[in-house]
Amino acid sequence: IENFFNVKKNKKIKKTISFLSIGNCVVQRPHQSDQLIREGTSKRIYSLDDAECSELCSCGESLTLTCHALCVPFAPCRTALAFYSHASPAYQAFRGRCLCYSGRFICMKPPLGEYSLPGERNAKEVMK
Image 1 (cartoon, rainbow, N blue to C red):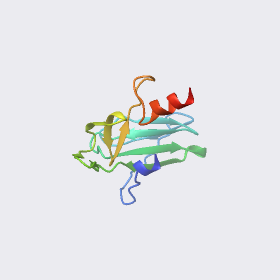
Image 2: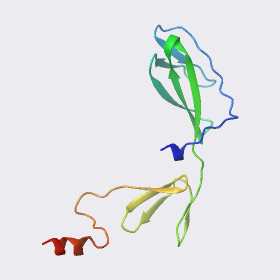
Image 3: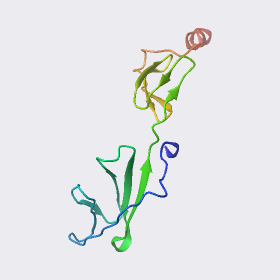
Image 4: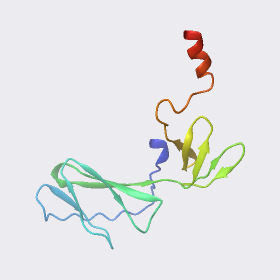
């Protein structure tokens, strides 16, 4: 999963801590409702105006709030036959329905019995 996310080092993250709720950090962002995070936990916060990035905010000891930007590059997927845009559906042989996500295909595993891998039938016959 780490390969999917890039930390934007130059992205400015405004940190605001309020002590309205005991045992919680409060993340305040413009044009968004305040987000409460319990001490010792983390929360992923999405922004409506930045589809490429979100933030992972943690409320540590003594209500110390730290936030890190997580960014997904919108890279296309490439096969021998075609290019697929980021977030576009695709069908891959022996993999079924897939989604192009950040330059890689993420594929659903079909229900057991609805698929077979190349050479799988021969291997089953040999084992009999």
